Length: 458
Image (cartoon, rainbow, N blue to C red; front, side, top):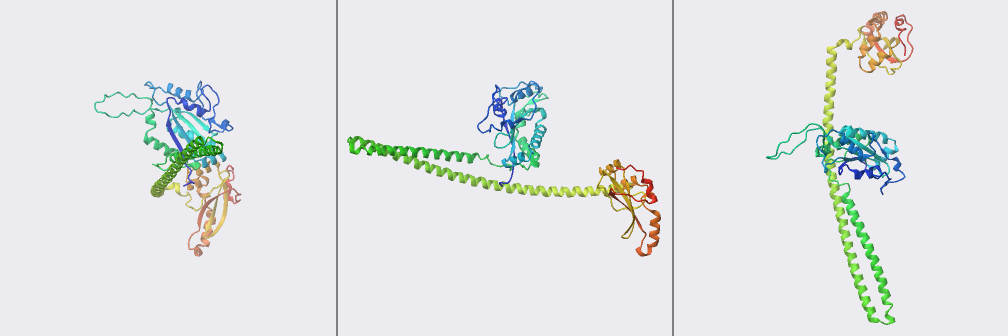
């Protein structure tokens, strides 16, 4: 499980035009001063970059959000409590993201992310996308204005007045952030990130991004700090007790005994508090272990279910692939029956081999074959454009040969007749004429080769 590298796509509604987040995302305040958060490495902040060019007159992310709203052609007035911007964090597991950076795949990764954002939310709605390189893991902060054009959905209530729905663009974060759409975003984003070694998380997972673990960790740290503080107070009280004991031989014995009793009482209370804290800490540790075990068992169940679903899907895909292959073969058979002239040589010879590996300098050759013996292997240069037609599957193998050779050029009739008459009894049949191809090489000086000597050579 630890080797699985996940694609991370997190969507969150902004407050108003989300100007509060612009300071963190752009690393500058509203008045243009540099702002570096505590978790950022200021020596790498210069590597951050905005990936989307703002319109003329727009200087920052907040203005870009408002510019999109002002120029989207909205029919209704935007309410004060409406969400104007949705912020999206796009990244992946730390190990794989560092690999992407080290192998110089980061530019390609950002381009694929931008394409996914524009294809998913509309190019005009994606108003900002900032790459952060100064934090632990490279990631993108994208900003989307939720402008939609579909018909507004209303809940049907008995006796509710019917309102006329206007067509055109609307500002609706509810449409963009619907449950079904959020699931679709995770699926399509994981598909886009597959080439970078990132995959979708477990569907329906109950994981809380380690929030429970973080809670228990913070609780234990708090207990440890409290215990250390109380131990320091015990030490201080013991020092005071020692000072009181030193007064016993110097008079004022009653006052010394009273102070000593108070210190003993204080120390006892502090030790009782420490004992209680140790007990509470042990309870927290046990709860943490139980929570981890519960989550681990849940993950195993979900992973097993996901594996079974993947195996079932694979079987379905294999069956579909087999069906497609069968249909393709059937189509090829029907094509041969419907267009026999495309699958035979004009001379009646048999095409037994066709392979032109070098289409920059193509050639084709023919020979006469009787049994295992081959005679007069003759090569010809081929026109480049014609070779490209064959390479692009615009013409069949037989059409390719027919275009290069006239019927009488596809065989050596005299030699075929002589060999056929001589070896008729030995082979049990007439000699076969065959045609084949290769790439490059010289050609024969036989008289019947002369007709193609003027063909353009590439």
